[in-house]
Length: 113
Length: 114
Image (cartoon, rainbow over all chains, first blue to last red; front, side, top):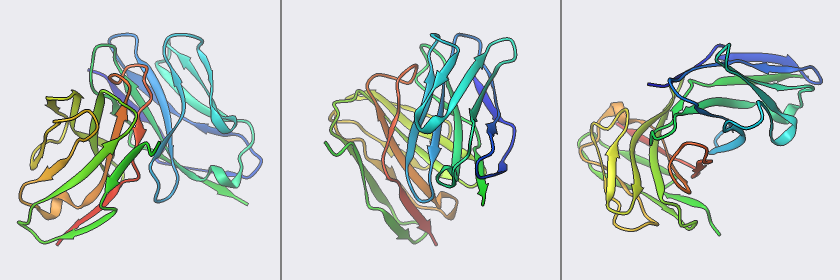
């Protein structure tokens, strides 16, 4: 069965500095992996997804993630944080043929002025 | 195109009461699902449906029922509310299943059980 671990529950960065949110996954197959963002009191929105094509995936708002099979990781990065990036981020894994997706517990990103 | 809609936005129930959370989508998506979100727990799958007439249990199904009589609607019923069901509930839909397909989420229902 698949699982996903977000290694940090909270991350704080200064505005204009790089962002790194870490995600490790476990899967017996070739999974699809997603990052979703949730702004305060809002629903979830897709940032980006990996589905066995290019290992470096670009998403919205300058975010990108790299699928590393050898490290079973799918870390989310952004070169320069903006105040509007303050939100909770979820890493999600899904196996082919499985009708369920598994959410990580989330990482809350704080942006310091 | 409204996407995924949920009603109500907020609800307060007393222990033992029953209610139905409504979810509808207008994208002709086959797959629909219900999650609950609790602090520090991420989102946990309650029930899901791969098409009209087909439902299955997720990770935390106890105390909840679902049915899917149409493609558009996927209501979640709380049979006898308990304080442990205090949570934020999200409905989601996707074109077909979960692998490789984006999930579209509704705005959520915040439920408090006293």
